[in-house]
Structures are given as structure tokens and as C-alpha cells.
Image (cartoon, rainbow, N blue to C red; front, top):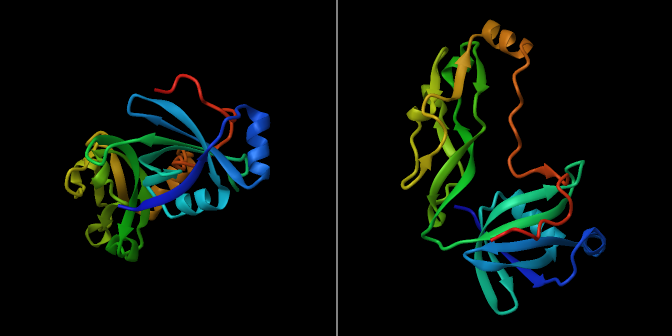
Length: 213
């Protein structure tokens, strides 16, 4: 599990104008919430937040003054071009409690079916997983060695890390090796593109302070 540390400071101002000012100063506004505590408005250096997100960090120790809070990254908002982070929400957690997170699928090795002329097709680029905070995996690994031409790996076929449960339906296709003609037909039908987890345009506004428990 990738775990990071973030130095933050309290912020008292709210609204778009205040958030724009923070960003102009190289800061990212954010919220800490959960665990039946009142939401806490904070800000942190934009470079530090960006570095954490690029590292694929899941669990963040947020340091505010002398207090350290264990959190998981709940939502990251990006600018419309996806170049910089505009807001981050962090959920307070206990290391042993169960959380639900999206974990990306990673293929290890070379698929024999691809070497035989097949085309690798991902049905799911990430999986909805439930596990203790301390057991959040960096990725769900699919071993490419078993992917012959025509092989289909369903959710039920995955080898999962200890204490990790996948919430997706067992019959959903994670990855398969298709014949070239089948892949061309699928492409021509215009399948929906997978969502990039955690990278959202700032279309919900600058602040979501109210209603969080």
C-alpha cells in the first residue's frame, strides 16, 4: 500500500474568491471530514498535493500543527484541462476499518495471445474494492502469462490480495484477448471509454463544505 504524508494548515475563508486566492499563492484548498467529527477546512502546498496524487497514494497522514490525522483520498478535483488540482477531499479513517476504494488493474508480463496476433481488450481498468485501510492494495494484478487467444478473465477469476473483496459483479469481464477482427468490430461500435479515477474537472464548484459528516 502506498502511504504518504501531507503538511497542511487550517483555513478560515470559504467560497470561490478565497479559493482562487489560495491557488494564486500556490496552495490547494481541501477538507478533512468523517469519523463523526466536524469537517475541517485546510490548505496545503499545491506541489505537495500534486506529488502525492501522481505517486498513486491511497492513505495520507495529514499533519496540521502538532496533530496527525490518518485519511484516505476521497475526491480530487482538477482544472478543466486536467493540469492542476483545484480541491481535495480527505476522509478520516482508522487503519483497521473497512473502506471502499477504486483500485486500478495492472497487467504483469506479456500475453501469449497477443504474440499470436490477438488484441488485448480491457473491460475494467479499475475495480471497486472493500478492504481495511491498512490493506488497500496499490493495484490488482492480472498475470498475462495465462492470456491465450480467446481467453477471458472475469472478476471471479482474479487472484486477490488478503482481506480484499471486489464489489464488481463476478461475471464482469476484466480483460480478454480478442481476435483482431473481433477487436475491430468492437472499436467500430464505439464502446464507452473508461473513466479516469480521481481526475475530475472542477465542475462541482470550489467548495463542498456543507452536508459532510
